[in-house]
Length: 341
Image (cartoon, rainbow, N blue to C red; front, side, top):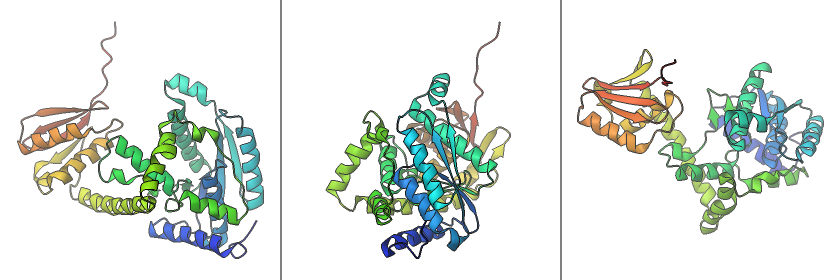
């Protein structure tokens, strides 16, 4: 195990850049306990090492969790690797095994989506059990670019189009490497002569994210070598815009009315049409799952402008908006299963 003073200057500079990024994002890790989602890949390996190198400087307590879904033969080697990494860098590693195929079958969901949901669920529960303050994920700038392209494909609006957050306060999730490129992370590991595991499933082109990673993103980078830097600038703008928007949301006051949300007309009239569209989407998302379609939002805004009388607009996820002269009611309808005989 190295200290920050013992590693090559270029590697130490990378570590300090991560510390500065955390500070810029308002992520207070001093004297905190951080749970790292460790897969053994280059990103999570670099993440846990960087946090260990910052341990003495920031008073950090670091531990890691490895999930073995039993889907790949190399997972046995990954278990050995993460255990050894924990021994060398002196942090505890917990290894949990899951039966993801069985769970995916029971929940009628795909393996990839089921794995993702289970991963976050287990991390959240382990966070509470181990009394950690944060869950640290190894997403980096290339992942952010992939996320932006995927959101673009799915028709995301602004500022969601800016991509994933570096800090999700409610979920206690942090992404300390989000500003670093894949190349910079691999260079950091090379300077430390640190090996890592390679997940072969990341190269399977039947998965959309992998196709974006290996076919679409390289085309953008070939056309513009500064594409990743531009993505980071876009992300920075989206983060600023989110903060501004959260302040504007607070101006609406209390919108909770029983099981529904009520947006008063006199308050909504203070906003521009584009801002109202974002407000509708924001509060519809508060009601639960179900993509908020732009077409429906435009219908809602049109009804608001026309001061429609009890006009109803349906949204995916069993959600509904009702527009009248008082304002806009947003509610989630209970599912109807029919009368039991």
